[in-house]
Image (cartoon, rainbow, N blue to C red; front, top):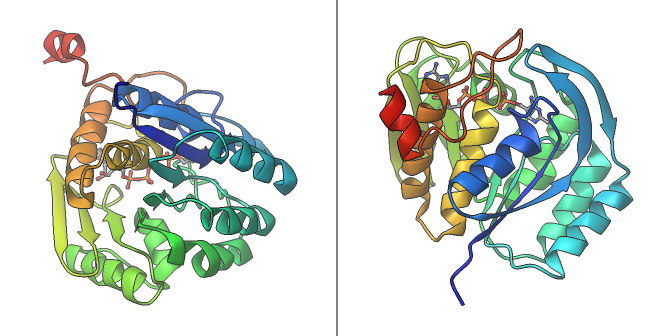
Length: 270
Ligand SMILES: Nc1ncnc2c1ncn2[C@@H]1O[C@H](COP(=O)(O)OP(=O)(O)O)[C@@H](O)[C@H]1O
Ligand SMILES: Cc1ncc(COP(=O)(O)O)c(N)n1
């Protein structure tokens, strides 16, 4: 039988299709990993912001996780929005039963600036889930919450990545510089080495779902057996092209283009 690489996302929804579970599944599909999804919360949102959130009961989250893992192989997984302590507990216990790379996008604030998690839950996430990760991918506002101080320069991004690994005990940390001015620089620290990923800054406000798309792409590449530095390098290219060819859709920050890498799209637009 042909090798199939299976990637799982555990996250909230975005009915407008650019972020959350929808972005993750589109990304898995584009990168040729078999995509699977477990829902945490149903979010009423679009490119302009979050209108309402409905958290699923944690018993139902548990039931979904078990349904997937008792039947399907999981070669890598990611979590996105996990917005309550009981849900974090369920995921933390379930993680003990699986053995694959775990990428956490610590979704705390939506691109629109709307909070997706309260302060107490942020602390719980640090204590119970971060030590079980292979990689955490905070943006700058999330990095500042995690390390408890301002992070505004490349040097500070390096220091923060080190704190997230050495003090918060993440497997590795990728601090994303999408919110800085100048080039779009991300810093990976894996407990031994630093790796810098640098791309031009694309003049676009269509950044809804960039973080989800990036961490899903990393998860897809990890599911296929790439090393972490390689997976991040490939995923950085994927998200950069997704922003370059993004869509002017919606009244707020438009969605990225998950099929930007398809040859015909590149040929038509380059
Ligand atoms: N305008 C842009 N041009 C190029 N890359 C960008 C741009 N904005 C964000 N990125 C990149 O997109 C990825 C997601 O980063 P970021 O926007 O910081 O995450 P989040 O969506 O979690 O806030 C990172 O690799 C970042 O460097
Ligand atoms: C359900 C859900 N999860 C995550 C995000 C963050 O999106 P972004 O990648 O733009 O930070 C979101 N808006 N909705």
